[in-house]
Length: 202
Length: 162
Image (cartoon, rainbow over all chains, first blue to last red; front, side):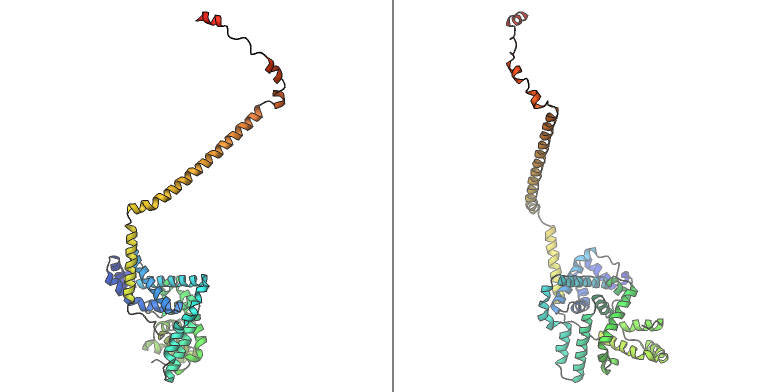
């Protein structure tokens, strides 16, 4: 979609002219996918919320300089990915702070799935909860670029070309990242994926 | 990965969304001709469904309001920064300018002192080079010192000339 036909880019141009309602509309539309991406990248819901907040604040601050040269969602996810990468780099520079993660791990996507679904009694729910936890764990173990490519692939807003722009690589490299990520997941999850629960469309 | 362009296209669609009826029919027809790929495709489609159904992260109900408040707070802080008064500017600038001036004057003084030192050294070297050897200069010292200073001025002649 050309940027000119992008309603979100048009909304952002209204934000540039001081339209606060246009900005809140954009936050409402994108808060869920941005927090999802941050949560699965950082593994901590509080940090994910803070990071997502920073993404939107940066977008607001950049409104005056915003030019609708690309789709708004591509631009916003690029900000989100850059902030996630900064956070990952910051953690690797200050490994001592990562120790805090150990007690917060109870809120990671993997653990949340386990506690949420395994607590419910029906066996199919147990199986589903176990599978979701395994999927979350397998996704967390992927290299950052494969994980981000896979997670962005879930977003219907973004085409493959736009995912490539967010990742800063070519279209073929992007598809290769997704393919490799999925191959790893298939290998790790094969026994779970073969259960009837997931092999059929619901 | 299968290199057949038709299968590649269907696979890339399946990564993003469920296949439509027509696409499913296309895939079934292809799988009928390639039964060895059926197992792989079942895994592929199952993974797509699992990834698609991953639960969303919890979003606080006041998230949008928080974002807006933070954005406006930072905006206001930035605007305050731009509106700072000249008095503030001078308060910040003057101490720095004073330190810079002191450093400049000190530096200049040190430089000039060094230059003067160099000049003196050069002069001494020049005198040392051009002056006669000290022993020769002092050879006839006693003789010269004993010479009379010569006759005084002829006071009468001077008076006449006036």
